[in-house]
Image 1 (cartoon, rainbow, N blue to C red):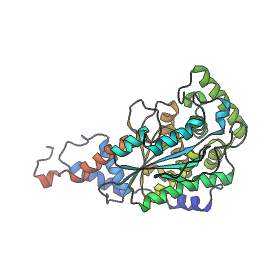
Image 2 (image 1 turned 120 degrees about the vertical axis):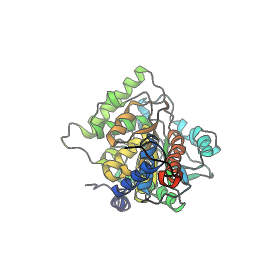
Image 3 (image 1 turned 90 degrees about the vertical axis):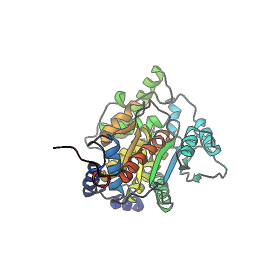
Image 4 (image 1 turned 180 degrees about the vertical axis):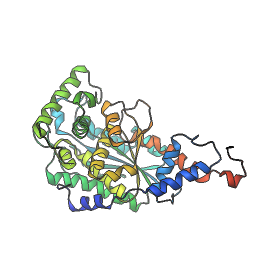
Length: 360
């Protein structure tokens, strides 16, 4: 039961269908007929098969790419859980809009149209190309003292993401990267990971933007207090939307709505690091078929990221020791995904090339 979802979000969840096992079978038959030893393209083969399944056997080429960065502040930064001040969120959004951040460089290089969504930054921005104003409030509430969002705020943030997914579909985008910016958001992601997976806070909590050992210990103490406040020793598992409302962030809620909307529109989604994967985990908890549309761009250095990837059941494409966020790892993986599709679509088969197959 997803009793906290608004009508548009419930409709999106209901619209998500399995990608289709029959397409996976067809894709494997095609892969096995290509002029190469069986399985010799390694991880590229299941990537191509997944894209084939997402698009119901009709892969659109070239894959039109988009990158979406959702930005918001977090009230829990008042507890000293980040090595950087809250003002950095707004400063980095300005950097995005001026084209100077890592995500700008990679989005330009890899042909991904960049959209920055202000869903909860504690600042106001001038109009700028690529900026979407969808501010719900100026940062989430301090989750260690009260719920991060009200039900109405949760719905508004998730619907902001759903709107971006609709826009991506209208633009004809086939492959989208989802990333974020928000000082304090590894704290929210750690809380989500602990509640969803049942792993301890010590296992899922890392150093974020560079906390020392004392800072990480303080972060864990704040998280312990937060989980006691909202969930106590409850015997039941909280609803996914309740977890998100209580300990999430506005940008995490928006990414959850975006991922659900993209899956409903049969768009392939490349998650970035720990924070975007926490949103993906909530989306999968709301609708397990969402997993069929997800790729993991990379495996972050944040320890909770691997826990969430294992929980969802998806393998990271890259291992680069990154922990930047912004969607950078997701965009870096896009050329590999498209390479897999090009090989799948353009390689000759043994039959068409007149090449002898393996002897029995």
